[in-house]
Amino acid sequence: MNAEEDLRAQLAAVREELAAVRSQLDALTTARGLTMAGQVRCPGCGGRKLLHATKVLDRAHGGPKTLAVAREGAFFERSVGEFQVYICQGCGLVEWYVPDLSGLVADGETVRELDGTAPDPGGPYR
Image (cartoon, rainbow, N blue to C red; front, side):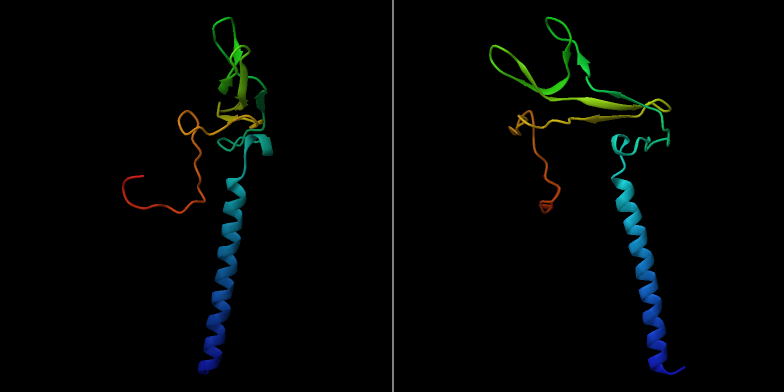
């Protein structure tokens, strides 16, 4: 085998390995998006029997209220960011969701916005 044939063989091996790595990366990326709501399957135990609570109640003055991220309004309180949950009947894993984000504002104090796409500032203090 001459040098050119050797390089072609090495290139073919690298391309094959790259294809395998891409396949693994695609599988990991797809698995990361699996949720109980989207797949009707528990990511913890694989169970297929779930409960979906469309309202999560919280104790409050004057009786139970829907659990929410915030309440707004001076005279008539309105819940903002009401919670829903999916519960696995097999292992008890719970996923929390806020299906309606309208009216929910990041004020920097009670609700903070985190941006994972922003570059990491580095250093020990963030």
